[in-house]
Amino acid sequence: MATATPKSKVQVRLKMRIKKGDTVQVITGKDKGKTGEVLRTLPYENRVVVQGINLRTRHVKPTQEGETGRIVTEEASLHASNVMLYSSTKKVASRVEIVVDANGTKKRRLKKTGELLD
Image 1: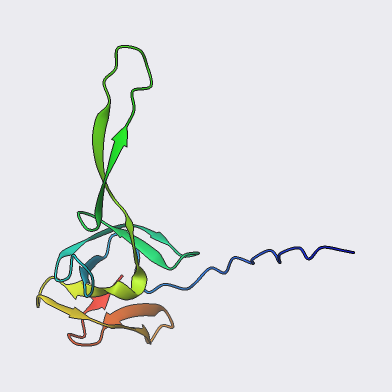
Image 2: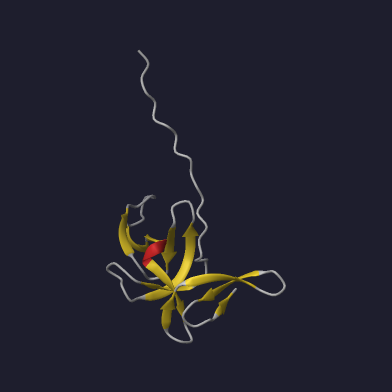
């Protein structure tokens, strides 16, 4: 009798409209209303790491003799649907649309303010 083996999950890279360096505002969760800069994106997991948001503390043991242990505070990832791009000029969060310029290049634009990104 053959045993069933689990199917290997195929990782899918999602297209994200949020990029590294963007300013975003958290719209749900414990840090709702806070803004910060995106430090990195995780497109295979559809998650982002935002500076100063979703902080986790981790206790690190000493690795060398004579070294003391320490407590490290670092940012954990957020799901990309929990953040919106933030317009620093108008101080408002907005959805993003992709527009094509006259010369054929794609740009990101905030829907509420019309501000072009990139």
